[in-house]
Length: 215
Image (cartoon, rainbow, N blue to C red; front, side, top):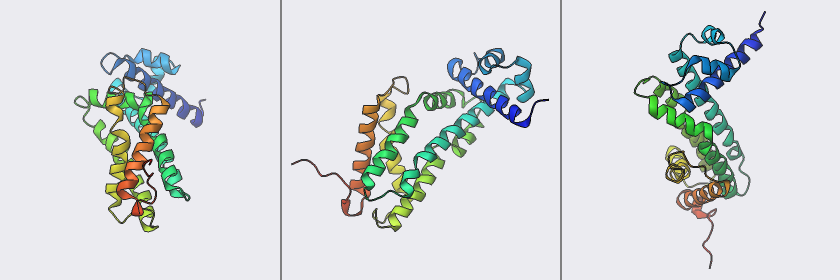
């Protein structure tokens, strides 16, 4: 008899395998047997857990989107207690976020969403529930705390969060050639540093945390 834990683990393996195959092949070209092989299970097991290919696709996208969101929310943790050097904390958080945005899984998820949205319009709900909007909301909460503490100037925290994320994500798509070029960590760190600097020049309390230009 399969335990509940074993069933959950097997389902997760199927979802992970499905996402890998869909990302590699696209929905139309992917086959359930290939997904079963990737997951290390028999083909009937896939159907026992997820009834058909379309259902499997939806659940794989939803699970991947939630996993990506969870990682990004965890990356915001240093802003809860940023310490005395807010700029350094923003750089740290920004660097973590751009690394996550540029990793293979996140790029594959975005490509799948763009490619299949017309065929599966309901996956837009997953993108909203577990996508940039949720991240922006969580970041706005941290920004509000920093504003109340006098670390940022009085402003709309939602706007501050949107601007910081835009400064981070904006350069990535063209530099990565729409997710097809790997960006090195040194370049990612430079993007994060520039984002923190520009953000604090705009939103920092009296610009106290902005880096001053060299003489």
